[in-house]
Image: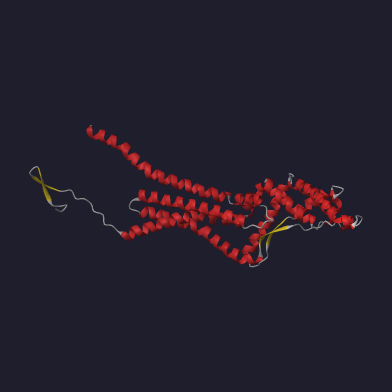
Length: 330
């Protein structure tokens, strides 16, 4: 019997209620699903793009990010060891050992070298732990970041280094204030030790990635927002669509956090043995701290959205049902 066919109720013919029928459009459902999926995946991916663009292009922000590392003990120990090793390369003991019998020279050289290194180590540590060192540290990183930005935006292949010349200048001044350190200070050259951040063969590849990151940081957030908004507006069952979209977004962000942890482990394991691992861990964690925070904020907001969308409407309907029942009875 059709929906419009008459039926008998109590001996009288009445018109059956016409029920609205919905025509299913699989093409629309597929399009909505693709929009929501793309938006849910692009939203977490826009975080590392925006983070990388900010850290690579904004020198002031980068310097503010690495400024706390000047007081980090692992970083201080690494700087002291690195600078001390650079200073000891210019210390010559041949003149001092001439008055010692030849057979005793190897043992005395080792003894003198150990003693002088301990002395230089103490002087360098006084510089690194002084109140004025944070300004020196910030200046070193500001110069390095400006050089990195110039290299990535230009066409040259000049390697980017972290130059500790200002630290060496402070160390020479510190050594000059000690009787034993006067001769050592004279031998130390004006130029300091350098840490290579970006080698010349790697510059073209890094420059291409840099350009991609700059473009992605501008395009990904609006594209993700447009896809999510369009998908939710076109969805027939918006609450269900919102729940699934938020769940996918939270999953993608959690996977991004796991990938970042894996990258951290792989990067630290690939470092040469001469690099202090505790210092490298501190640097990596400080540089990626805002990115990790942003990822977990996205996870929290997405899970909260999915939970509220799943729980609030049923609770609201349950609370409205008794009031409707009492209104009908009245």
